[in-house]
Image 1 (cartoon, rainbow, N blue to C red):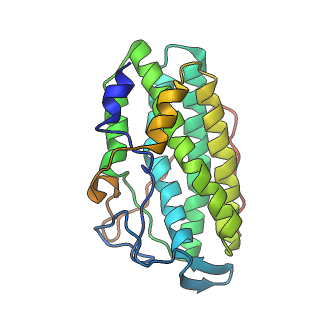
Image 2 (spheres, rainbow, N blue to C red):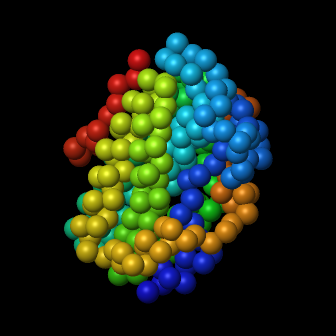
Length: 240
């Protein structure tokens, strides 16, 4: 299965892990934290303190949508089975709704968010863009099951530790969305659990630059993920 060969160059369980040096993050980010303690408060707001971990989580959610949304569109267009197309629909609608909440939370807390995914995440999109047929279906299901499994524990940790009410709301919605996406990937019947869990727990080491989404240019409009019309809505959050 091609996914095993791809894993060495594209996969990493920490795909969505990144740490920002400030609320408005600089052009060069990386995996290393800016302080030894992720609980360090970097801002005090009316909805509670914002820690480094809170800020990182808001950016992770945004980065996830920036590549999983277009991959969901690929699933809708190229999936050869109803289950794969259904999974693509869940990705598109789930991340459009989650991204809407994330953008509101970022604006309320003064957190700068990216408009493009990281090079590593762009690699996921490129891999699936170049595939068709059964190969696409299989890699689609396994890539998305692995990445969602990787972020699931992060969502739980943030939800249990954050003192900011807006971040809690975002984590609640992310938890529902990620679990839904894990479930629909498994329902394709294509997930190789042994391989996926191995990649999830023992990822190859990639340079920080591959895991970092580029910072938006000054004045650059925030990209909006808009689902196609005519299908059932996904879970949404209320920010305020």
